[in-house]
Image 1 (cartoon, rainbow, N blue to C red):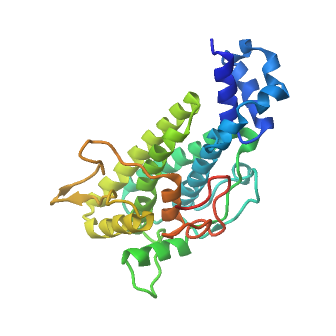
Image 2: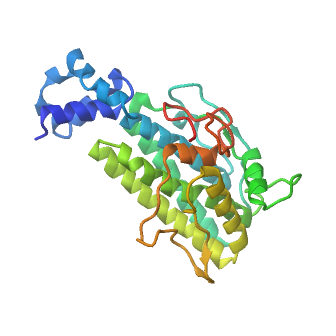
Image 3: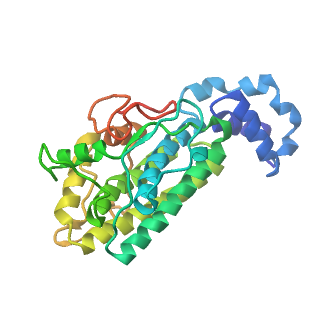
Length: 308
């Protein structure tokens, strides 16, 4: 059985306010934690450990950061496959809900790529539902998302198009794959970078599971691009991401020394990490410390919202 101190820490780190800590405790009781005692819900216990929580983002804040990214991916894939975005009931929450700029159904030419996109869209929708359920009333709403102008800005930065040209990731399946490539590798490094910030082992296990799914997605997109011999375009996007996050040359294209490079791992075989701030550098399309831009014109919602 869990010790009382451990449960207090888990509750304090699991949500962003006392009401949601109480909700988490009630839910956890069904899993066997109820034996710790109903008195743990008291205000004196709820305030315990608040100093520790202030030193680092709470688990709730980290999960809300992930939810912002899942909103972005889910909207992108939903439009690409179904021609519409997420249902309103899946986008409400704390802070003002934003709309989505851009998006339409992709005229897929290859059956298998259409199937890949359909499966990924279903996974991203499931991720949004899971994180919203885990966070309960602490879940943030969908921020304003731009999947039109932001892709053009990213494509220009990568040198894929001219300064006056536009890039539409929904125009054809090749553009769709490049758009998906921009997201997927970032998602993998984001979940790996966020893992050390999560103290609740249940949430950590769930985040690891989502990371694994995102890695499958990334490998699928990288493979599809390699099969189409779109090495240069993918390499340009990889270099642009590296330039945005300001880190070492960790990002990798889909080909290396004339061979396929499906897994962008270090010599150790381990995928590198991006801190939340570095992830926001990429999605804000900005090398500086800012709170909005790019795919999130008004910024992401929640406490983790500033690029590095």
